[in-house]
Image (cartoon, rainbow, N blue to C red; front, side, top):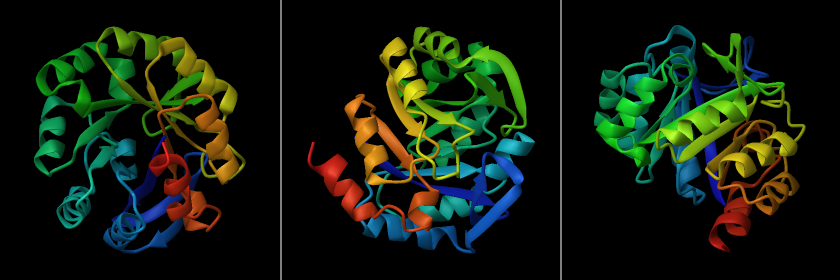
Length: 241
């Protein structure tokens, strides 16, 4: 199981939200690059970055920060937030980003996902499904759609998608454990590579995700709050596989 340490960027700073609320922001570093270098030094094989401003407004905002990170670390980076057009994808990839995460657009325009995969390949396109009570949230988590998370995942699979980041919003930033039940359901129903996100707070949580065969796990607040030792997590769940 691959471990993805997370860097959420807002106003150029490394922050965490609680339950996706933009009015509940905690700043952990004024320099996201330093955090990226720390994760790399601790053995991370991939970094997960979200442009929170971009997710909210619908276009890239923190590209300079992302470009600096990508140019300064030697491990691959995946980025989400505000990616709505083919040009957005081209631009992100031109920064050196390994793969992009598309959320809102997957709900509003599935044809776009088909075009993206045809243009860039399935290995470059990851779908972000952010859900609350099983329903997909869009527009930086500000709007809950009528789209069922599993139905969306299955539709994406038909288009050739291989990997999905599944986030339970009610769990995100709360350090109360991931939604194992829903994560397991979407993994079993789709057979896709599922990266679990939201609420992971301990090595035990990671064990539970590994037991249900999850492809990867994104860890955010638990790292910043020293609830999980990244070196130990990578040793236990990534290197020993």
